[in-house]
Amino acid sequence: MKKTNLFLIFLLQLSIAVTSYGQKVVKSVINDNLVQANSAVVGGFIGGKLDASYQNRILAQDVNRLVEPFRNRTEDRCWQSEFWGKWFTSAVLAYRYRPEPQLKTVLDQAVSGLLSTQTPDGYIGNYREDKHLEQWDIWGRKYCMLGLLSYYDLTKDKNSLLATRKLADHLMKELTDKKALIVKQGNHRGMAASSVLEPICLLYSRTSDQRYLDFANEIVRQMETSDGPQLISKADIDVSERFPKPKSWYGPEQGQKAYEMMSCYEGLLELYRLTGKPEYLEAVKKTWQNILDTEINIAGSGTGMECWFGGKHLQTMHIDHYQETCVTATWIKLSQQLLRLTGEAKYADAIEQTWYNALLGSMHPDGADWAKYTPLAGRRLEGGEQCGMGINCCVASGPRGLFTLPLTAVMSDKEGISINFFVEGTYHLQTPGGKPLEVVQQTDYPATGKITVKLLVPKDEKLKLGIRIPLWSQHTEIEVNGQSIGEVTAGKYANISRLWKPGDVISLAFDMRGRVIRNGSLPENIAIVRGPIVLTRDARLGSPHVDESIKPLIDKDGYVKLEPVGVNQDGIWMKYKCLSMIESHKEGENKPKEITFCDYASAGNTLDENSWFRVWLPQSIDPRILVK
Image 1 (tube, rainbow, N blue to C red):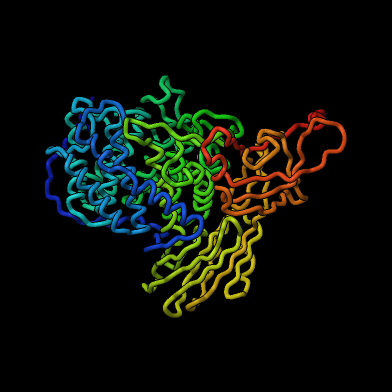
Image 2: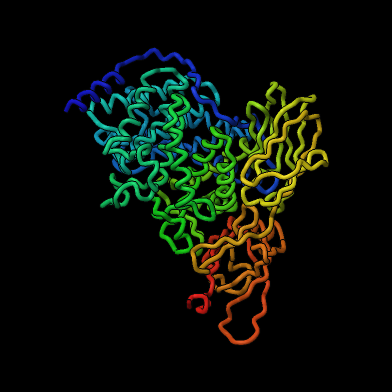
């Protein structure tokens, strides 16, 4: 009883009407190691994908339909209120990449439409008054806050910040009035509701209102109670084993729900920036590594039925509701946060793997739609409509991962710049001396491993150039103005510190040999990866059948020889031929045959019943290797 009384007193203090809504930015205790580029113009295949999503998903969205539920406020269980914020934060990322007046007009209208629904007490949501705080209500408020704050950061519009404050104040007051613990609201051990931690931290950093920092600290305190997800204290435990199997898979006891868990960890990183408490960063880093080690599959994502289940070692099997796109996008976002904070190459490696495979694989070729689930074998299928909104959660989430890439491909730090991703385009940054810097990447990567980088500095300046060497590139060549810099280490950044002059040229050549990936102790399944790209059998590419047992010819060093067939042909990004043995179940000579593979993102992208594909290649087992 004593603890409960103290909590109620705390909430009462939070809800006291402090209506002095001045803005004072809080300086972070922890600054990011890497800062995104000021602007970028991306070309090539990737630029085309960004443009397709921009035109056919971002601009094509009927914004009035997203706002309408906030006017009706009749909901009692669904998640209609998330769609506005998900779409809006995607649209702001897209606008920062390509600031076109048409999109700005849409953003302005979306904000004015949402603000017109705010009730006098500050509520923005679509739940019936007697159902406030239940189910997905706080989750939806979170997305409204994130959207409004992204608009404020973009425009410095005071009305959007004021509305966010009123929305946050209303939430704190409701929790007080109803004597409610936030971790007891909604589903998934309070993770959906507790993920409001992220915008609350952002709101504090933009207002310096101590009440919001206090509320953020209280959310984390509740997270660590027996009712909460215990995201810090359980950071050393596999994400799939933190809690017993719940009675209801999608109910309040589900502590393995992946998307909501990572959303909470994003909020914990924002609180780390504000407080500098190392245990917050350590908890996220440990959990991120555990997810990578136990859950993330060859395409860079995971989950079954939207939850962690120890699925990495099970990825060759058919898994229900596999690889949710909301999880894929949030894994990218969480990894981007850690890349910014730490500057460690492993986070960029993970982003690249996921972005080129699982994320692009879930995107419809024209950018208008996104698959909800993307298997490693079978067919790609369009997701169904949710909540009567004409879209689903994954259609809204996909672009949130997609548009993280342009301004993070090349980033700046205190000593210079960092090339994280190898994407055709021009990137504008500032040097440590405050001078404008233009970085030009010329490449068709990952179709090839060759990249030319030009540094266009206005005058000579000494700075450090960091170049990520992917973990898979065991033999990498780097030259500066034709001179080799010597050996570099895979999985690290190659740091080149020198006096750079206008027009200096860096040439990169990565190891693009076909690599064989094995899963399991017996030769049950193998897969082929080239650079960051997972190669895939597709029924469109001819015989043998995609489910046939084939064995690629592997050289003495463990690589397979791949012959390029074409780029951007017949709706397929990349195709390669590989000599393979086909298990014919016959006696006598069995000669190798050329088998055609394509990139995972293109596999099955016709979305018809004839477009079957497979990543993992089943291997026939010779019983002689089993007899001891």
